[in-house]
Length: 445
Image (cartoon, rainbow, N blue to C red):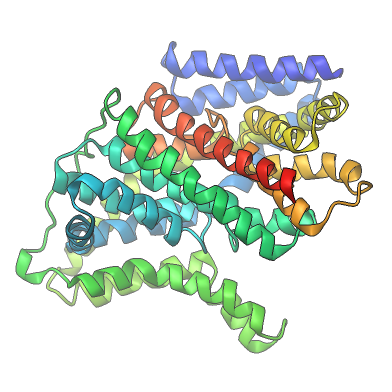
């Protein structure tokens, strides 16, 4: 298929998907499946390959996410019912004040998400947003956007995050410069896209607390201390952090290295945290085993909808990737003769818009620009700056083919239109700010 045909197919698929979910009010899961099949057919994929690609897309997305969301949902629900999240919310409000609680959540997202995948961090921290919003009686949007901006900023720009680490390695960037430029990109990006934009957009979009997020089950006298509550929230972060940091100082393939890899995997880290929350907090403080079972079951039910829709988004993404849209568009942009830093940003952004995955957008952009820039003799610092430009482009204009779009919408209760006005704009502000910082560094290095 020609480049023009592939690009038109991708654009038409996205527009049709938006029509289905926003105007025809077709369920997002069904709409994504229909549009994925249509995109495969019109891009020229063999019919037998379309079905296999759909299966690969669903399995590849849910293989990791299903375990994380299920365990994380139970973990968060236990922390809420025991009052642990309320204790953290109260301390945040005392430290920052109610008027600056959104800044506290932005910083918490930026710091806590460092060792985690984006999806894991959201699952673990979303309960704190609801607890703070309930305490302040405020709009969930004002609290959720800063947290998501912090988490997304860390996931896109900061080492040792998986995506920036992958980018730095693939681009042969200097890791020291990658840390410095990433910090300079993530912090102002988080502030602009999080507390500042969140305060603005909350005047126009209102989201209420989830109906099942009421007062904690345990009485005030049985609630844990702030220190213990914070330790529980940080436990999976610490376990993953031990793997990320400790493994760098341990001999590869040694027994200790394998142990760190095992306990630091998100599956094990959240499972351990969940068990500690159940047996070290809930049951120890008087919650019956029957009540614990009821709480865990209630937590899993809404997670099923999240997983189905997110998996369908993975199906659509995989069809677009396997159809060859990304490489076709990349070759067209590289041949346009624009400045390399701008080309890195636009290329990653274009692939992101078409197929949804930030990681795939990064890898596609690297694969297309590296043969060009490797001949130009750029330093490791300059390559780090270009890596940040790619990372910024890879998160802009998130919409219905991005799993983060659906995670945000389903966890906060936002409609597709509200998610576009809040989440999608936040991601665009964050990515653009970070990329501009990368371009500035590249110009002066």
